[in-house]
Length: 61
Image (cartoon, helix red, strand yellow):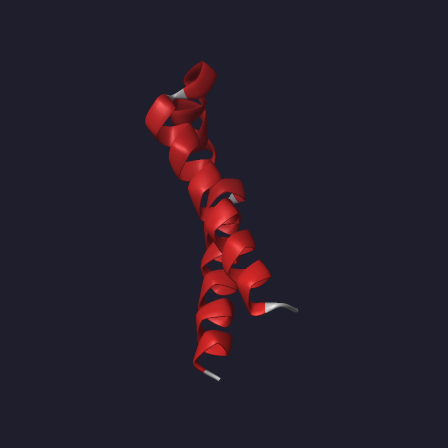
């Protein structure tokens, strides 16, 4: 996969849940906090971090 595309995907996956928590879009921040046991938000953050790390490591090469 293209290293810049991986970085872009990682940033999108990281920024969407963070932006949703900040703006509290239709009380999603409260719902996400209650839904953390299910792990949807944590999964998105984890996938975003993984893509970001992979993209940055490819950038070194």
